Structures are given as structure tokens and as C-alpha cells.
Length: 256
Image 1 (tube, rainbow, N blue to C red):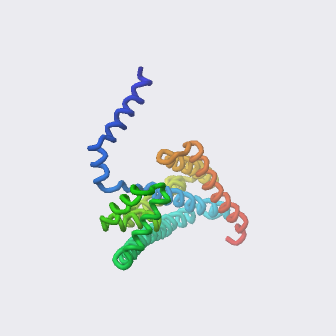
Image 2: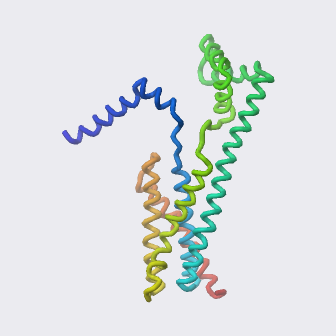
Image 3: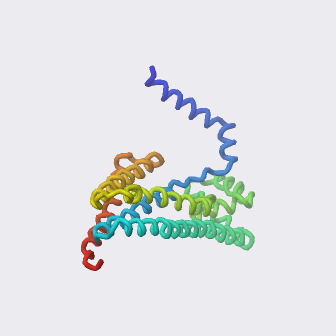
């Protein structure tokens, strides 16, 4: 009986969320902002670049103190750089939307018949024809806001809502700093103790591997992907970058 309870409860919940009243309330509210991309972007890059520094420095035979200095410098500088880049990129998307909106508003005012024909052909390609097609066209062009937004979605392929540039930047920076700190923890926490550098690197490697896998597995909760596959993919990609950094450090060790 317990096994059947959850599917039934889920079915009732799904139906409750799709009553006319619930649907109207949901569509009337602001679209949900999802910052998963920004978190994954910052977390993986933070862990990869910081552990790459740890790997490269260890491969080059640098001291624990230098590893810590380089690691924390990367956390702040590279994390801030990524946050700024994400902020500017997200802002550019919103600016593109606003520019396209201005263009469509101008076209609707200047050549309304041409814009109306575009609406007609867009919905004809979707399978509408005859009187139904003409009715759809008249409904859309009868509402200026709907008309312009339809053109933005259908002709320009733009989303009418997007994440806040500031929120995207903050999520990226925090994810970069928090997750990127993990490879440095063994070196930082065990600095007062006389611990062999190779042991520190081994512990850091193990913690980083777990982190790579965990970030990938976390992503799978929000996308249609196996947690095992997502975690393994992230682990292999991050591990590949770290291995490359270690090899380069070892090859250039004589320059230190």
C-alpha cells in the first residue's frame, strides 16, 4: 500500500496544480528565475581552476605556502572575473531583447501590413489555415503588446524574461568561491602541522573528485539525465583539466 501512496499523492497534487484557478494564478505571476546554469558554471570552473593551480604547483614542487597563496588569489580574482563576465553577458541578452522590441515597435508603426503578414505566415507554418488562421491573426494584431511579443518570440527567437544580471553574477561568484575553496582546504587546515606535501595533494585530490561528482549529480536533479552519468561526466572533465595542469607543472619543474 505504501508503494502506491506516493504515485497517487503525486497525481492528486498534479491535478490540483492544473485546475483553471491554479493555472490562472501561476500564469499571472512572474516567471520563475532559474540560476542553475550560473551555479554549475561557477562551481565547476571554481573547482577546476583552483585544483588546476594546486596540481600545477604540486607538480612543479612548490611549497604549501605558495599553493595557498596562488589558490586564494585565483578564488578572488578569477571568481570576480567570472562574475563580471556573467553579469555583462546576461545584461547583453536583456539589451538585445530591448533593442529587438524597439525595432518591432517601429515596424508595427511604420509597416503594419507587412508585420501582419509575418504573423499570418508564422501561424500558417504552425498548421493554421482558412478562417481560423485569419481569426488568430486578427486577435494577435488587435493587441499591440501581444503582437510585438509574438514577433520577439517567433521571429527573433528570444525569451521575454531572463535572469537578473546581478543575481546571476552573485550566484556565479559564490559558487566559484565556495566550491573552489574545497581543493585548498587540506593545505589550509593542515598548514600548522608537519604534513607531507604528497599526502596533502592526495587528500585534496580525493575531496576534489568527490566535489566534481557531487556537482554533476546535483545538476541531474534539475535536468533529464542520470545522476551517475552526470556526476561521472563532470568528474572526468574536471579530472582531465587537473591532470593536464599537473603534467605541465611537472614538465616545467626545472624552471622553478
